[in-house]
Length: 124
Image (cartoon, rainbow, N blue to C red):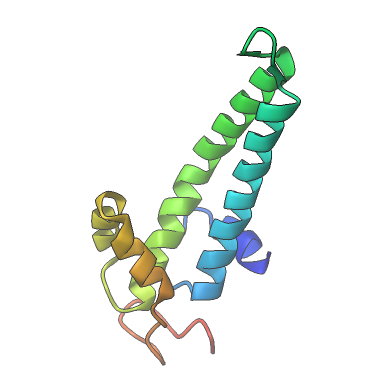
């Protein structure tokens, strides 16, 4: 949960570095939120007879979509900082949008020990 809070504190900060813990905290909390929203929309927000969403279902879908838009900037920022933690330029994360396996690998690699050209070691 700390990673999630830290990522939102650094909402538009593309400089510096982010540890794996911060990155995964942010990602996993958001996956849980979207899984809960999906479960709610498909269970209590769905009219099984008409096979459509109820008003509550549409509210849940719209709220989850809005939340996804809110996550866009901090998601890109934390991904930039994660790439910079392993010593790669943050701009390389754009490649990760098209090759998600690359981002998964980068998310699992330990960051450089000590300072690198993007800032001090976030573990220190």
